Image 1 (cartoon, helix red, strand yellow):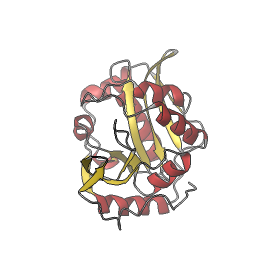
Image 2 (image 1 turned 180 degrees about the vertical axis):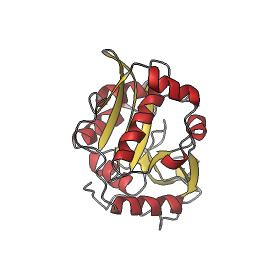
Image 3 (image 1 turned 120 degrees about the vertical axis):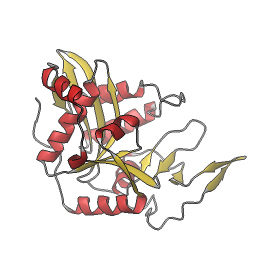
Length: 237
């Protein structure tokens, strides 16, 4: 994962001011390392390598986050409810990797946010992340019901650490089945955890937990040093 190391500070050494003034207003910036840096392929690659991710908020210059507490899912802690196990066995769905990245991210952009604030996956995000995908650093899992896309997810490979971005479903359990297939795939390649950025009730049910920023950054660095290759040959099923 080639990066340009100059745009963002090292979050370990950054001061994280509690408040930042933008225009006439002050905004809580305790989880943010930067406002307004451009959403380019180079910046995305650098950011994820440093444990930083962008998140569009309407009315603000683009914030780049490295939260004080980071949600992660360790595969050894994964709890799959019996109902989901049954659905995974009997769904009849087909799963693929990287067959329809743009379609997946576009579908994710249409998922309503819990706070009602609209999507954070803007057209600019779709274009930039699709370019990152074309370079081999962003990946999608597709779940198909026949020829119809039933659900899926996408994320960034931050040099051997999968950073989950968003999920969607059009059929019951389709996004959850995409996640289980992803975890199987990553585990086969030596991975034992994923970054899910922000905790949700669904991931908490599956066994995810929050860890302090410094612990996450240490873990990210150590895992990147392992040199894992998470994606490559076809693994459709």
